[in-house]
Length: 46
Image (cartoon, rainbow, N blue to C red; front, side, top):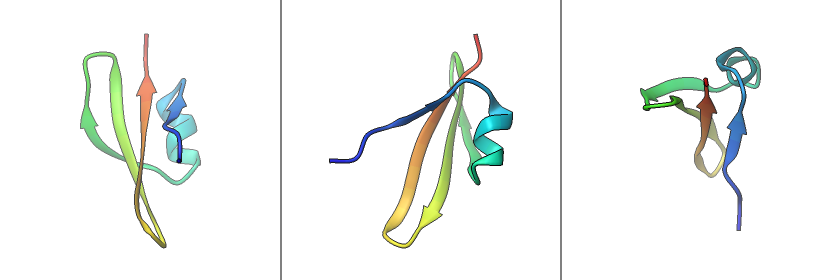
């Protein structure tokens, strides 16, 4: 089972190829397209 990536900054997520999907209370929900579908991750900006 795949895990959920957690980035400490939005810049790190964008550098890894993710794009902003939604805003959360503590940061962002980001996504990237893979060969098997969408990969999701969260960015915590505390």
